[in-house]
Length: 202
Image (cartoon, rainbow, N blue to C red; front, side, top):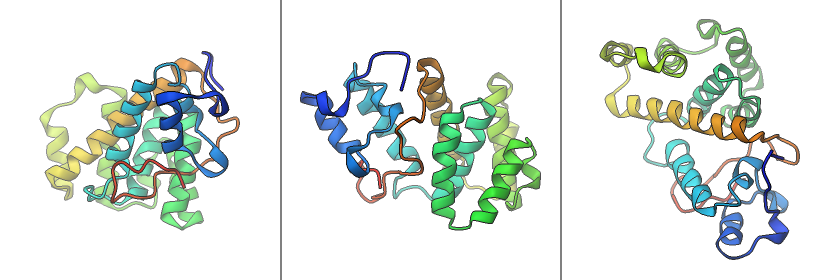
């Protein structure tokens, strides 16, 4: 599951067990990215709070499927197969269009988001996400101005930025600790956007 010791669900006690209970999916499944935090439950708590608020909060204006698209894009650019597989499965479920989802993934794998079935505004977000992921030190105010010119409002630009930043964090968590998808149920996510404290995966 990872290169460091993890505590299985059945052996968890105290705060860790309470957190596991909050993040479980069907059959008591806990994603390996969360289990990787088991020796320091407070970092799992921080990770889940960030993940829930950035991708699955009712205050977001951007559709979840496109936030997941950005997550798959950033993860692909970072070479994080774990997050690509998890969040592509989520994208398929949320978009509800297998053919379009496959076309988006093909464009991502080809590093050619202009060929994806996305509108001009969404493509502009993909350009921003690529630059922020690959060359963050080269970001300039004009990169934000380009998003505004494409039709994004400043609050939405913040959402785009935070999704890109979160996935680089998640990718490095996975890649630095050797997490695999073995035993994970792909495509689940916190479904209750109205309650930021509901972390249950479904």
